[in-house]
Amino acid sequence: MNTRDFAQWIRTRLRQKGWTQRELLERSGLSHRTLTQVLRGNHDCKWSTMQALLHALDADVAIVPKDLPPLSGALFGEVHKSSSVRTKVTEYLEDAQLVVP
Image 1 (tube, helix red, strand yellow):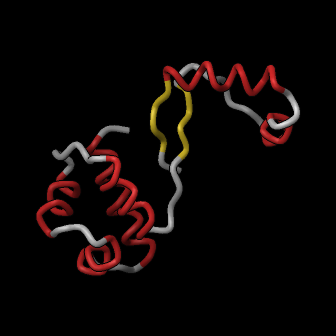
Image 2 (cartoon, helix red, strand yellow):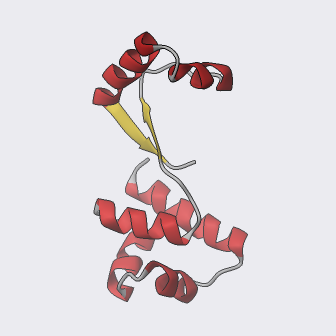
């Protein structure tokens, strides 16, 4: 997800929640300047900025390897039982991308 996509996702999430940017600003604890830059889509967020925004918007982050095929819920349920699957997923994380569900 690039910075413009993230900005669009935030604006969509604000509409879904019926919040204003001011409400997000208060809930996230970010400065007005930082939030404005993020919402313009031309600001590479620090991890702490993303965490503050995601927490304020009641969202989680999933890190998904680019080349990992889609896994079913059943397979995810088996990850804790299978060290080979866990090892494979760990290897894929080296070449991962950030996805905001």
